[in-house]
Length: 441
Image (cartoon, rainbow, N blue to C red; front, side):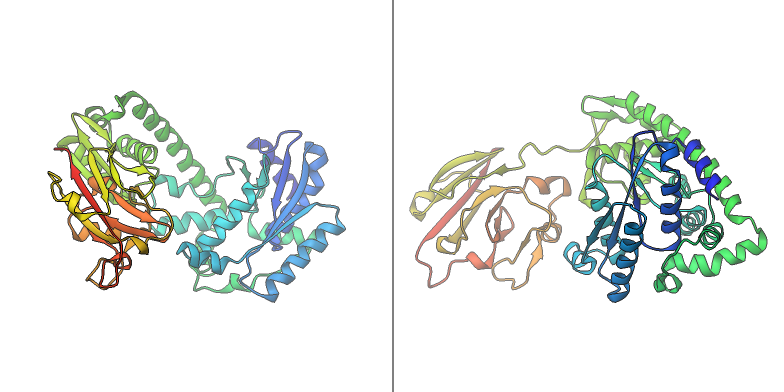
C-alpha cells in the first residue's frame, strides 16, 4: 500500500520539497496508517512532518484515552504533536448548530491556526464512495457527486486511492497500532448506515465497487471542472456596471447559466443559494423583479442588470446620545429632552419616548444586525427584528435601511416598529428622551 500512496502523492502533486505536512490524527486505523506512511517517506519527498489531534470532549474517558494513545505514539516515533482540547457540546449550543457541524468548525479553525502548511487528512477510497452515496441520496448535483477531492487548497488526502480493507491490512502487516471509536458502529448515523448496510450490498453486485465509484467520481469531477470554467467565463463576460447583464445570462445554456448564478450569488451575497432559489433567479432574468434567497439576501433584475440592492442609507453611525439633530442617510433624526421643542417638527414620521435613565451605557444608531431582538412595549413577547419586520410586511430589500437605536444591552428601538419595553416610560420615569425620525421624500 505504501507504493500506492507514493504514486498518489506524485500523481496529484500533493507535496513539494521543503513543505511542512501536518497530519490530522484521531488515533483510528486510517489516520495512524497515514501517519506511519508519511513518517516513512518524508525524507524521500523532502518534507517535515508533525501531527495534530483534537479531543472533542464528547466521549469522556474514551476520548482522553485516544489523546493519550496518539501522544505516546508520536513521542515514541519522534513526531511533533499539537493537541487541542475542545468543548464541542458548548460550542454547538453557542452557535445553535449540531455537534457534527460544531466539531468540524473547531477542527478546521485549529488546522488554520497551524500556519502555511499542508494539512493531511486520512480520507480514503471507501470514504470517497460513502460520501458519493450520501450526496447522491440527498439529490446533490455534479459538484456534490464529485465527493472528496484528492487535493483542496492546502488539504491533501494521501490515502484517497486506498480502501478501508487495504488500510486495516497494512496496519496488521506493519504492526501499526490504532484505537477503535465505538460510535463508528452506530447505524443511527447516516454515514455509518451507508458503511455497514449499503456498501456490503453493492459489493455483492460488484466486489470492486469502491474502485468503480472512484472512476465515476473522477469522470464527474472532470465534467464539473469544465462546466465550472464555462460558468466563470460567462460571469466575467456578463459583468457590467456593478451588476451582471441579465440578457447574457438568460441566453446561456441552462447548465452553464445555473452555475453562473451560483457563483454570482456567492460573490454578491457571500452565501451559496439553495437549489430551489436558482430556478427563481432564472425566472427574474427574463421577467425582472426581485427574489429573496437563503440568509435573507435579496437579488433583483433592474434596468437589465442582475444585482444586489445596495442600501446606501444603511446606518452604521455611532453617536453620543445627546440632544441635537443630525442626518442618517435620507433621514433627519432629532434627539431632545424637552418634549415641547418637538411639537413643531415637520414631516415627523416616527416619534418615540424613552426613559433616559434606563439606557445602558452609550447609545448609538446603526442598521440591524443578525440576532437583534426586541420586546415591543405592550406585546409581552420577545422576537427577532427579522420576524418582526416580516409581520409588519416590511419588504426584505428595505429591512437593512431601518434605523435601529441600540445600547450596550441591545436594541432600544427600531424606527417604524417600536421601542423595547425595558426602556419604556412609566410612572417612575424622571428623564424622558424623545427621538423623532423624519424622512426626505
